[in-house]
Length: 539
Image 1 (cartoon, helix red, strand yellow):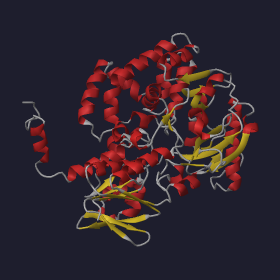
Image 2 (cartoon, helix red, strand yellow):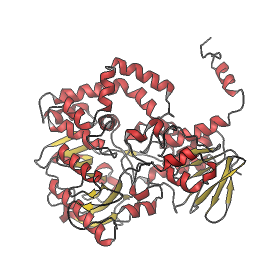
Image 3 (cartoon, one colour):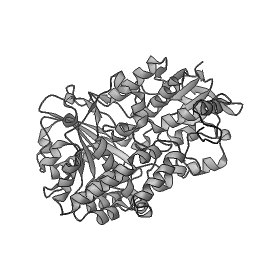
Image 4 (cartoon, one colour):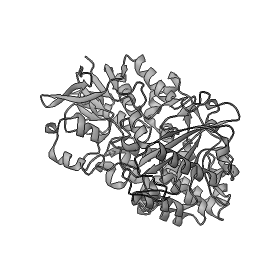
């Protein structure tokens, strides 16, 4: 009997399993799909000569994560690769904002839009450098982050106190207007804010856009060499080297609760896998509380709050095998791994407004990935493995382009939407479609079929909006990996701090499980060994 059963072999589940295995626990991971990885997988399904990331691709949060750094995955085969520049945001008039790991290159790009904007970028970066250690500590630790939060509060005070806190909760449109005179800095912040489901006018989108750009400035947007699945492979190899087990093709349909605590799981095949100490769930919140745990084991308030749970937007993705590099009108875009495609902040607002009205956008904002630019091993020399995704409503009321897309996502609608996305690329890269060798369309139902956590194509485990973050994530009054069922821990992006490949929800859940089973008196002994008495003061 294993000490712990982990449901789901996505990155959070695998991180949780590794943390438990490091503590000497015997761990078994059960995964529904035929291979591990969740939304961190690659294949050659577009063209045999091209490696395509099926879901996620760029990992700034992984590069910044002290959790993944502590696992030392490079010793298990992981290598990171970077494009020459991080993010480009071209405009249809040929200008381009460029985020580069060299602060001076980024500043020069923004200075070209308006005098003084280069210095404005340097000021924002200086604030980031002051806040970065404790900001990341706050981000990657369980809520409430007492120690890191206290240190961050002191650093915030030194960086301007309430004025800085105000900046972080501003809508990204307003933050850009206050900090930059030209369009370059504004669109760079706003495009990065829309990596989440935050409109340019949403409270907190300024802080999120600033965080993403600063992560890119410091860490880049790296990719695993050879394909995104190389990150998964390293996690699995590390776990197995510690005696852990990963079993695929095992769909869990019930958490077994006995005597008021989780004692194992039952699979769709009818097998029961007992857990001596804990069950950890790398699952969406509605799946865990709505399907796997019987209602009688959950508080009525939780079930009521669950009806108010909000998903992030659905995702529509297209992969391409290109016979040559993308013919960008703006030369700087050829250097970047990630390219944002929207003609200014107003077009981003228009896109977000159409989503809010449950319309399929007519000019979809695209996040475009140039994977061979980022990692030359992805396709033959002189070609490009590329993808783009955009967001669409879960429930569609109208098609803003009046082409009849209803959300049935049959073959015709998938082709219509993919063509629309290619037309958007053509606005910034005339001649793009002539370089397409092959393409693959991944509509929201397809993404969910390949990873059940991506409900309707939602990729962040729930909205990033402020009403479902911190102590409101996944529902009000939670914010931690513990669940109402003793022995059961939430280890997915549905828990704080949310989406992204950084391992924090998995690590937080594993540490909570370890803490629950810490032998009595161990904490006191550890304090004595470290030279601290019960008050925490050093002797």
